[in-house]
Image 1: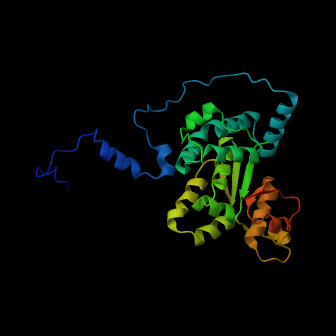
Image 2: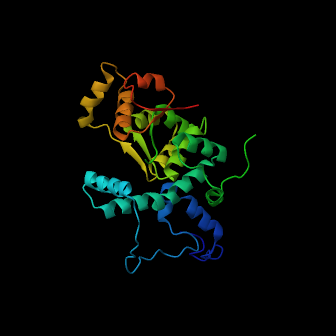
Image 3: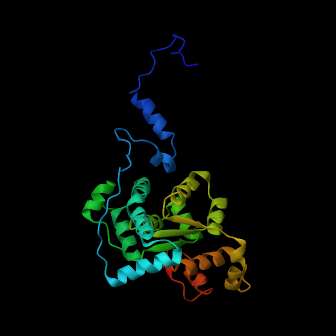
Length: 136
Length: 128
C-alpha cells in the first residue's frame, strides 16, 4: 500500500503531477499511443449527420474507381472511403514513425525520388517538426 | 498508381538497425504518400530470429503502422512459390518474389541480381 494512503508518507499525489503523468505516458507502447487521449485533447465526437460533397472526376478516374470497386466487390463509395482513410487516417501514425526514427529531410527527398512521389513541401516538413539541420 | 515496396530480409535488417537511413526513409515516405508496404512473413521471421529484442521493436513499430501488410506464408501459395524457386531452396527469396508479383511493387533489397534470376519482370529498389 502506498505510504500516502495510511497517512505515514507524503501527501497524496495530485492529479496534475506531471512526472507521474509522464511515466504513465512512457509506459504506453508507441503502437498503442493513438488509443490514448492526449493532454488537452477533446474527445472526438461523431458527426451528427453525414456531409455530402460533390467530386468531379474525369472519365478515366471514374472508370478506375469503378473497376476497383468491381474487383473488391464493394461500392464506389467504399473505395473512396478507403482512400480517404488511407490518406488522412494513416498520416498521424506515419508521422509518429517518422519522428521516432528522426529521419533526415535529404534522405526523405531521396526516398521520394526513388518512389516517384512528391517530395515533402515546406509546410509538410514544418508539420513533421523533426530536425531542421542538414547532414554534413 | 500508389507507391509501394516489398521488403526483403536486408531491408528489414536495415530498418531494425538503421545501418543506412534509406530503408526507413523509403518505408516512411511511401506510407506518408498513402502507399503500401508488404512484409513477407518469411522475411520478417528470418530477421526476428537473428535480431536482438532491442531492435525488434523497430520492426514492430513498422508492422503495426496502417498501410503495412504482413503477407502470410500459407499452404495455398506453396505451389506458386515452388514454381518460382524451380529447385532452389531459398524459400524466403521465393516468397519475396511471389509478393512482388502479387503487388507489382519493387523489392527493397541488397540482392537484386539474385532475385531477378527467379523472375526477370520484377523491379528492384537496391539498398545503397
